[in-house]
Length: 321
Image 1: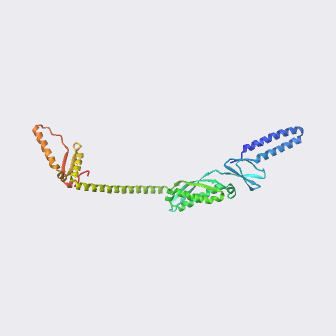
Image 2 (image 1 turned 45 degrees about the horizontal axis):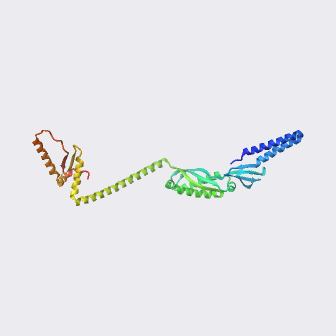
Image 3 (image 1 turned 120 degrees about the vertical axis):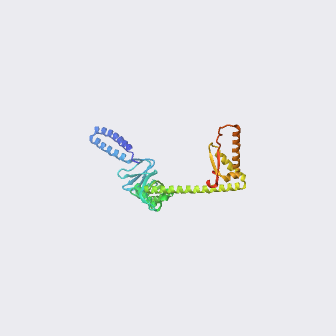
């Protein structure tokens, strides 16, 4: 807050004009009396303009009486005694935001970091703020930076990156303890940014990538275990009901033979167990007899081919099971 210079100027002009008119009237009657009146007018105008002060609602004025603390004035309009009293300083009682940082600070695990933080504080005792410390704003900034370096030195990088709320509370307590004798209250402290070396960022990125790959492999292994368990359950069901196994195998063959010109190789033992070998041969003979009886030389459309193969050629199991 600053003194309302416009109001002081207005008072000075008003007194000067009124006194000037009176001095002019007296000067016409008596020249010495008119000059004396003019001098008195100037002195009164200066004294009145110097005694008027005004501060805003959120401000307080520190008044000294011959150099000694006389009290706080404001808000609004107030008067002081010229020459004997003066306004030493104006204190802002609103919440003030200050930024501070700690560059190249070493953490507990020997990692250099740059930390930026924001401090929210306000003056609750203007008398202490003006009498106990020379410049409370600068003192708060230095105290905040020192406390930040102290906390960083006692914390690891993981604590700083993941536990910001905890560090904010610790910083608030430390700074508040240091500024309380100055009549200043710390509202909150918030860490804005933490900068680490680029090489360390790359190493942390590779570590995170490796951790994700490890988790993916674990999930894949667990999936394989679950699939194997389901296969074991299916095997037990098929063992109890061979007919269900045959139907499943035939369904798989049907699904594979839906495409034209497809060829499926299955173990010969699978065809024997499902009697598909004899059925296929019988179907081929019946189709050949029909063609000979009709006397048509045209070749029939090629049906899907099912060829039996030794179990060793296909690994001893049906595809898709």
